Length: 108
Image (tube, rainbow, N blue to C red; front, side):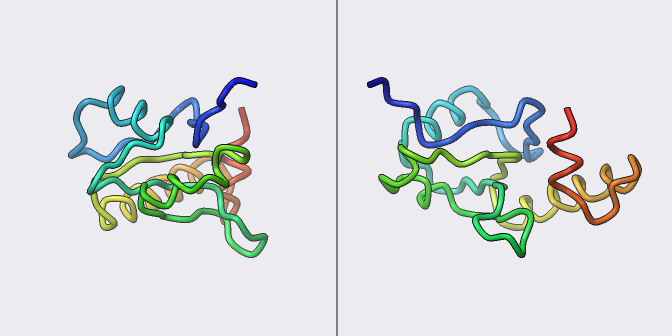
């Protein structure tokens, strides 16, 4: 059985403006390698929320090898991750998806 990885990346991944070496960051997230200041915007695990902001160390748990999480954005700090969520919300409102962030992100 082939190892699937710890996460799945959104095809139009949102990146924080302070991040460099995008491919290296993606590789480390996929393989569960440690990174100090990386926060991920993911699909929420419960039905009452839409998006979660989690530290990348959370993704190293063995559960995520069998159930990879969808990552919509990657940021260098929690504040930058909040800015990305605001950006996603603004784009969703402009396209007519008020309050339906997952519907906006999964539309394509």
